[in-house]
Length: 94
Image (cartoon, rainbow, N blue to C red; front, side):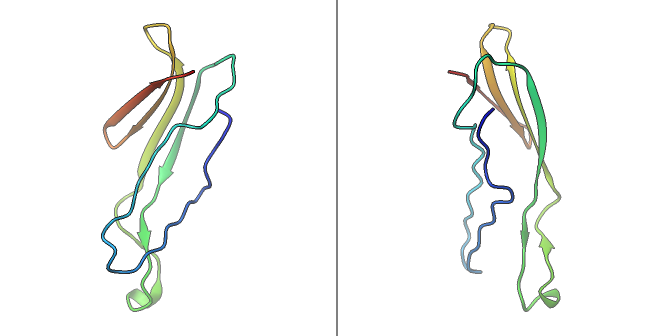
């Protein structure tokens, strides 16, 4: 995998915003020849309010593990796979 996203990628919002996107997209470029790669990332959701707990950082939920890999599947096609919270998505590589 060649490209990456900013880490962390913070999103700021007002207290009345009830929606925050959570997109996990595959990288935009790959480099051939493909080879097996596997790595795990941790996603953390947190919030800060100056009127709560002296403005200290608060966690929404426990950390979420995101597992990514590039591999040659049983159909002999190289794929990118992401697994998070029990969901798995695979996409064939170009």
